[in-house]
Amino acid sequence: MTQVMANSPAVLNAYLQFSGALSAGALPAKTREKIALAVGEANHCDYCLAAHSTIGKMVGLTAEQIHESRLAKAFDPKSNAVLQLSRNIVDKRGQLSDRDLQSARQAGLNDGEIAEVVANVVLNIFTNYFNIVAGTDVDFPAAPKL
Image 1 (cartoon, rainbow, N blue to C red):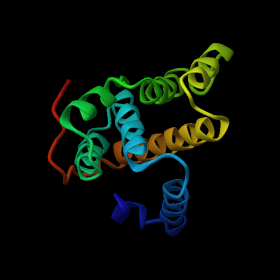
Image 2: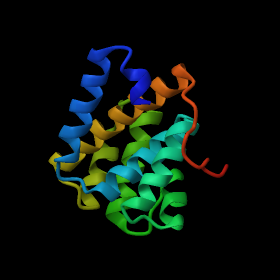
Image 3: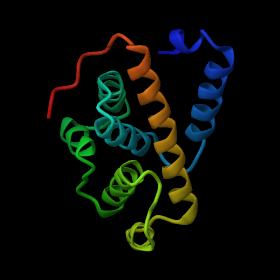
């Protein structure tokens, strides 16, 4: 993916800076990978699903957590709220209701975490769309179809 982005140094730099900044945020790697899986599934991005399934395993997600994340579901309430919020952002194109945000807060997300969920969703939409448009070859083990 980054090899294709390198056709435009500005695009590659934007991706690396955005991704790097979010990796230093409050959301742990497991949560960021869960978001990536939920967004990748919503956008039908085979490359990102394969990549984040592999990366998810590397950061400690189980096969069950990877599967559930793709469905925007999780066993623990806070992770479930993150995934539901992520999927709502994609499905509603950011037009969240007060109820959507209230549900996230009631599950334990603070405003900083909600902001980071939005940012991680946007980053993953960018990479999903980029890889779909570029027709990036899947160089990870393919994610199983749901």
